[in-house]
Length: 179
Image 1: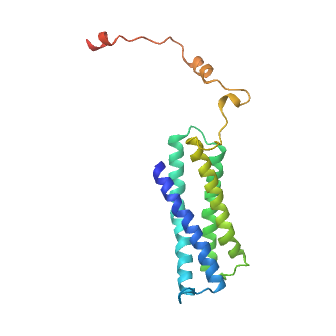
Image 2: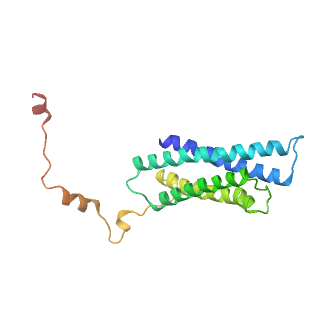
Image 3: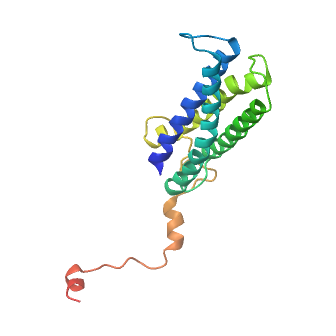
């Protein structure tokens, strides 16, 4: 699932960028090679629908991967979850506004939401995702606080010593194999 999550999130990032570009091209009436309004409209709708459609499984695979790899929900995970939900709600709202006849203008609520808004949310998701990923690969500073730096410090050996009540048994493999 970890690999699935990392692959799915790339599509979300790409579609947010395509949606922002299509919105700007549509709002400014730009024509490229004789193509314009209709093409930008299709790209805008398709990419926004794609963001919602792919964000849901991206979020679910992220939760699933987190549950198997990490013991607790660290602050970076909570921020990523919140940003994922913000992105889904924001893009769903943008689609509703477009469906209700919202005007495609750069200097509008919709323009601010689609262009800098979605890009900012995805940038935040990318930041915290890379912080977790690169930190776990020891390529960057992690978002985790080592146990010994906590207040009060936590020594895992002390924690385990309270659980272990009997000394370890020694096993003689030669005796075990004859049974």
